[in-house]
Amino acid sequence: MLSSLLQNFNKIWLSIVALNLILLVLLPDWFSKESIVSLLDGLGAFALVTYIVVSLARALLLLPITPFIIAGAISFPGMPGIIWIISTISVVVGAGVVYSFPSFGGYDKYLEKNHPKAVDYLKQKILGKHAFWVIVGWSFFPAVPTDAICYVSGIASYPFKRLMIPLLIGELPIVTAYVFLGIEISDWLRL
View (cartoon, rainbow, N blue to C red):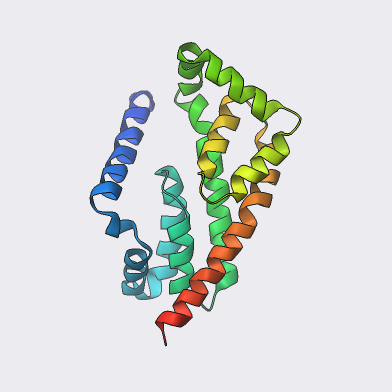
């Protein structure tokens, strides 16, 4: 049973991700900050627990963290530290999932076999002497997905512990800014 599940894990996981991407394209309002806030507001006492679970689950579904951080700060404006901690943990969990994905699904071998030049180029960049700053810059720049640098690091066998420091240096200012942006939006909405 377990071996069957592991053999089909990639198909199941990719189906869930594909379904979420289709929903994101067809029904973008479902994943908007307003929709997430509305969901959390309707949950009452279970809202914070639900927010924690959803923030961690979004990493498994490769959904961007930005709307979740802002929605959490809007929903819980009196708890910026808690939202910041939850969001930071979600970044780390997401990084770990995406970093592990190439080897877990066997995609590293597939990519190395079918795209050896691209894989070699990416490995040289991530394993080069400026890897720390490449990761910091990539993580800090909000227009590029942080998951991509984690995926490349996994393919390149860049040590996960060495990935986390520059990743967090790049991500923490962005997470902090999104938390405070969410609080400001919350204050504006509650006027």
